Length: 159
Image 1 (cartoon, rainbow, N blue to C red):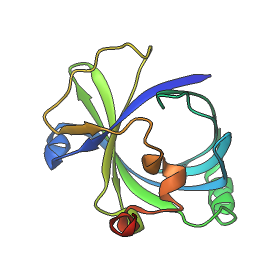
Image 2 (cartoon, one colour; image 1 turned 135 degrees about the horizontal axis):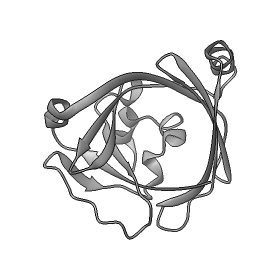
Image 3 (cartoon, helix red, strand yellow; image 1 turned 90 degrees about the vertical axis):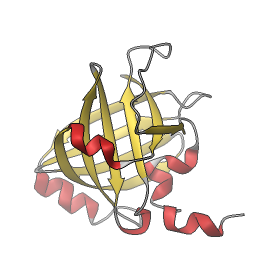
């Protein structure tokens, strides 16, 4: 399956007023090789195993396969993931008939809030809400697999 998405920084909490759901997510990575990322996710009371391929040059498109797994299996697999486990609260917001998933990170990535929108084509028009900031699609620092290795709290020390 092909996933097409764009990613943005979020510049205010206004999106919370438009939120239609909120879920705690814990996720870890069994493999963070850029050619094949293997992710384990606990999304509320459901578990998922996800495999993602390498992104295209713009970072908008890549192959993705995802399977629902038993929550007990997801929790067991999280125990053998690479360090560190990411925790975030995911908010789902519908704006102008577009679904945004906004992740408010916790722990070592606290202070980072990202919005993603999945598209049907790379050319789809996005109507931007006021709370949507700079686009960071393709900036690998914002990939969750990289945030687990180089958390947001460490970026002020990067050169």
